[in-house]
Image (cartoon, rainbow, N blue to C red):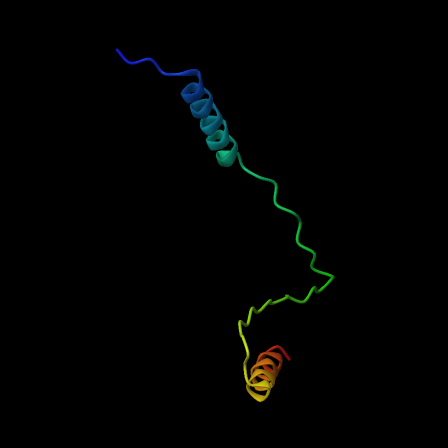
Length: 67
């Protein structure tokens, strides 16, 4: 017969609690209809020793898409 160690029991209990808490319905914040908040988009552009002109064109392209 196999014994379940205290560590295994603790992990199983914690996972069970997390599962039960994730199933619990959450309160949803009320939507604000009167105030319009613009969406924010973040872009990550990687580069190393790039041509400055190409980098400028790339950044301008991203900015042109957000206006």
